Length: 133
Picture: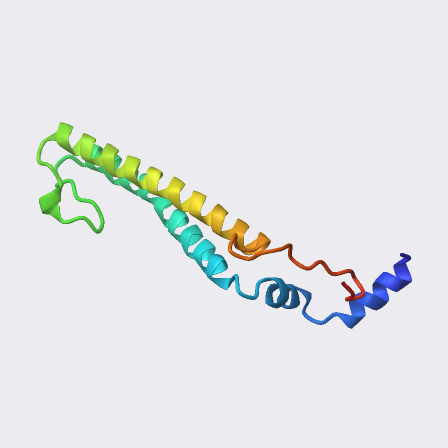
């Protein structure tokens, strides 16, 4: 196929990304939504360890202030320094594990979106540049 033919085909196609999403993503949008939601959750969970580590380091250098974490009730935080260390390490570990699980679900969901779910029988239709099957 020469360059002139490709240019003519490109001019005929309007909103190619939307067309591909609507044509090949029909019936698979739930996988796309799950992928986007878990991607957002994974990014939020990836921010937990640096925030908690920053608060813990500030607590060491500003020892006169009580150790508090954002969005964590003070009753949950241990009184002893060693208890606070293990609490922070545990929260960071849980955030990292949950982030890894979210990334796995994201990758699986977006893969199912792009290839079609396992409940569909038969191969997906393939189209050529000129729209024929």
